[in-house]
Length: 426
Image 1 (cartoon, one colour):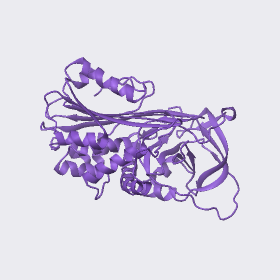
Image 2 (cartoon, helix red, strand yellow):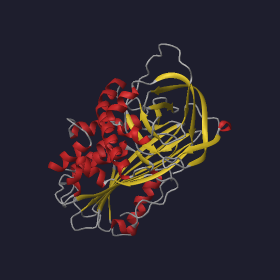
Image 3 (cartoon, one colour):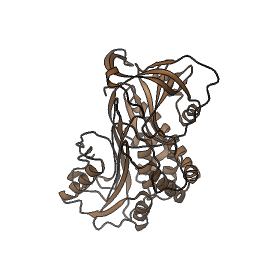
Image 4 (cartoon, helix red, strand yellow):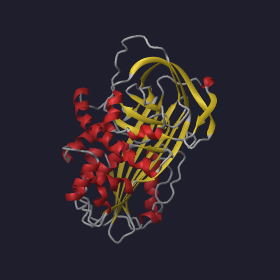
């Protein structure tokens, strides 16, 4: 396993590949989040909105389905605890891995990613379009995505695999001598730079001794709310944990008009970021979170998004800060990708050396406060507001028990983050 990363605000995804008989060949993905939200924005070098929306919708729908399938396994694996994933981050790295797979291994990865009839050329094109659509360097919304691929000197990495990574994922590709301590330093410096210093160390020299290939994806996101919470209105109140006890926590308070949805199962509200296409959905179950999670999947989520409507009300939301890590080999195997982790794996399109996927480790961090959110990773979905036909009384939504969140870009439909917040203090 990789050494413990040293980070000021920690999120990362590690994708590890191993050659049969070797310790491990690692494909690593890194992500960072803190106070804000992952938002998908329109960049300056883009196709027309109509063209890009059409292209991205298919991929965003697949990533949303994959994200909820993976989330269902993660909440079983970490029952009752906080779970925070970036479906977009994980899907992007597995998509790059898929370019190196062949035969039954490629089919298994594609099925796990819910790609349907989306073949590899279309997948690469749509991924490139989505990356361009999501990246933003605005003052109040920053979303930066970077990829890099380092191969062991002398190891034959297929040129087509490297070219695809460069062309569609803008990956930097270089050779390193993994036997030298400087190799780890080179990778760590790159990660620290791309995450604005949030992740200072991802690999140790010992991690690279048997590596053939290291694939790193770094995502940095920071965004302000469209309407910030007044810190003077923040008040302490009890938050009721699922296990029974309660904690006295600072709750942010806001009154006004929100995109809102309520039914017999939950209350839900959307909080937009400075770019209103990006927003955080907060679902507060009425019975309990476990019952709500039983009906939570990609289809129901997409259906609910169409039912939000503008409504006056008040919201009390606890500040929360979550660090999360999970090894995804078990979950991905259950979802159908087991062959990629076995000696039967076929990665001939990546390397002439026999190899298999060793582990997929996802680490994430999110910090939500009165100003906004900072985070790393992403995925998608689209929402429209329905008209309010008659006056309704203002709602009151007090998020004082475990809840579910999703951060989504409504332009592309990308689901950037999703999570169960069982304990806001982490």
